[in-house]
Amino acid sequence: MATSGRDLQMRELMDTMKELKLTIEALRKELTTKDKLIENLQEQIAYLQKKLFGTSSEKRSLVVEGQLGLFDEVEAEAAKDDPEPDAEKEIVTFTKSHNPKSTKEKLLKGVPVKEKVIPLPEAERVCQECGAELKPCGKKFIRDEWNFQPARLTVTRIYAETYYCPECKKEAGKKDSDTGNNLVTAKAPDALIPHSMATAPLVGHAMYQKYANAVPLYRQEKDWAQYGALLSRSRLARWINICSDEYFVPIYEYLHRLLLLQIPGR
Image (cartoon, rainbow, N blue to C red; front, side, top):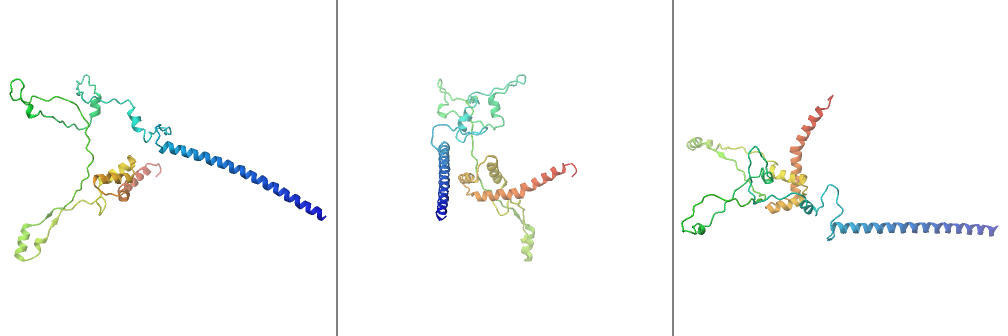
């Protein structure tokens, strides 16, 4: 019986070892599969990084439908059929019976036009035939040019005028009283944000750049620095938050109440 017991234990040990071997093999296969998966993922990441950030001459193929690539926008827009109007072609006006507006007229509609007349040098204002002095008789159209003046940042230093009464001042001098010290000062309009240099045009421009043109505050910080203003992104963010809470939230709540009144039964 003792021999049979030892044999039974040996068989159990052998079976346990077989199960362990099978488990180890299964784990090895699973690890091998995961290693291959990790390797494939790493290759895909390297490929995408090369496509996104690599200095490749090939054009990006990962373009979201309906959106322009970050670096392909210029090429894509330039390829569109938008012919350049002749800058040296004079605008022709027609009678009301025809009234066809030229492309140039449409392009310049609403844009202020400032004329620039180039004078003839004084040394050339002499007739080449007889030497008499030339007299102006008109001007000749040459071309139209676009002109752009970058935005400028200025500081408005606000003062309030102070007034005094000269008659009261005379009486105060005679009576040796403080009557002439009654000064009247004009009331200045309230600041957009108390104890701040922020103004509606400046904060409005920061909001427009951030939410309409998707320009982050850290880039706006650099733009303001070019204008000469050291406006940090934290200060811009604080101004935007304060103006949103103080001015936009009340408007939103008012419009929300108006919308609720349109619901039947309320």
